[in-house]
Length: 326
Image (cartoon, rainbow, N blue to C red; front, side):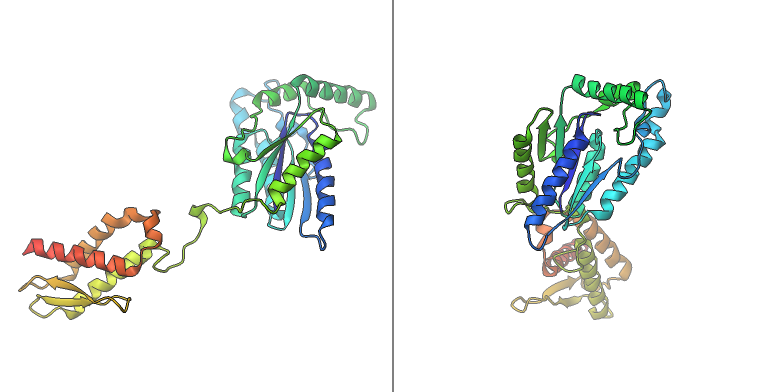
């Protein structure tokens, strides 16, 4: 079922909101008997990913190696694998994390689309100063208690500043960041529930839109309404074979090309008189015809174009070519 990507500044309360959303969805799913969906919450914490992997601050990583930070790429790969493992039309998946790179959110959008399940972004919005204060308090508490069990892991200050600088805010005008929902730092329980209700209606409600897969990923069947090139090759090759089998020893004459439709007359190829047409010439004409019509791939008319139409076009093309050679 839907993929819900939580995004926001570091230490902006994403994990708290993700857990609240998890509890809300758990209750909504339990209302359906038998339950229709499974529920998953995936995060850096659930995969034991340290926040140090995102540290690309100038004091830690050299400038020319930041773009090749293997630890952060490995972390995203682990998150992606965990999402892909459970994402289906029967699963709600909440991905809690920074999710601050728009290219990463686009990758997740494509994965959801390939699974024909909806996805959305839940942005946890707060002021930069508020999020910074939370991180500083965690740093002080960690130093005082020597990282007490249960205390959320803070970011190193330079790492935190760098992540804020690199954060790419979700844009609802782009398809991979839409629909976009937001909860504010000071939203109370009632307002938060209203936002979660909107998410449920959009992702699992009766009025949610059906997700269509990318047309480039849909495999076409090998029939007249499917694989255009396959049908084009097959029909033109059959006509060439009929010409070679039916033409006389001295060339010339007519070659009948049957159509599949019972209510249509056979097509006729008029061969040039007194001249036998050989295989090299026919193959050359066939390749030229295919080259001229190869651009039909992807056009709307191709999807409904029957094999009879291709045979008619090729016969007309051959008759015009033979007439010019006379």
